[in-house]
Length: 222
Image (cartoon, rainbow, N blue to C red):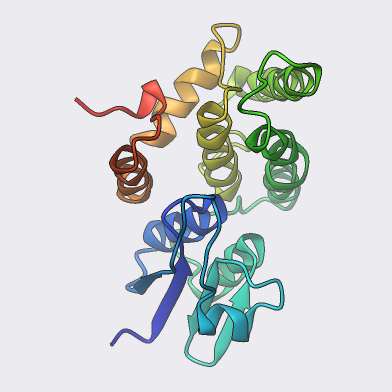
């Protein structure tokens, strides 16, 4: 058995972040998929997830005697423990900007997407339209960052992993990108073609399809 384990779920945005990061680092790990039900819950709760995470959520990383939860904390640990290849910029200011983008993906962008989870039957209503508009505004901000670079913070980083996965879920819930952000669409393609990203996102989309759920058009494989 590998010494490193990641507990995730078939439709866990944050678990996918941790998986992609570990693959980008070339880390050999055992992936444990926790039980999932059709109501977008992870039930019954896995005992190791309950033991490690007081929030009872994936992802959980166990690496020797280190036990962590929260995708951002896992990012930080992986960077310290396995520094090559780097996934935070080396420059201090650039690294701070990358961390801020990753935080915005989780704490500013995703909350708008989360609102849409319960509004799928009323996407023309005021609440859903406001959430979608907020997502479009954030896309516009990211578009500006890409005016002179291929990735959001300069080199490919955890910021790209985090925002990409949030974009996948935004598209699933009706707040996808529009032609108004062509550079961001190109960035999405660039990130989505990475082998570590495909290794995690393709099975997620296959799981969706197996349940008769919609798969974003940009992720449908020929």
